[in-house]
Image 1 (tube, rainbow, N blue to C red):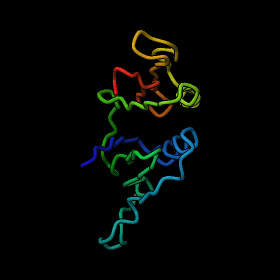
Image 2 (cartoon, helix red, strand yellow):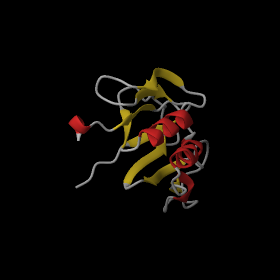
Image 3 (cartoon, rainbow, N blue to C red):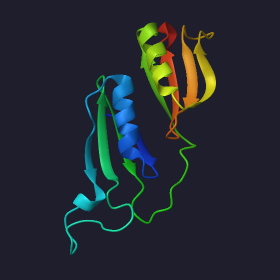
Length: 141
């Protein structure tokens, strides 16, 4: 079994996944759009939001981040209840990723040493995703 975070965006999923691929140095995300759905008179969704991402998958260092835009006609909701944690063995890599995610972000806690980690920081990125970026601690493995 594996668990994968699934993030929903209000029409910005493609931009967010491209941003995350760049920050993490990952290959481009695999995506399918709502207007590519089989069935229906036109073969897929039409109207506002039809070109949005129905499913996206970004493979990052052995993990998978999944995402989509809210379905056409569905009201968007804030990503307030979930935080994605990126834990690194290398402190410099953790600091680099935090700096990359920080572009246009609201910094909740600047990246720096804490009592449980050599490097820990929290932010809400420009797409509304909540992140914790940290250097893995020996006691937390």
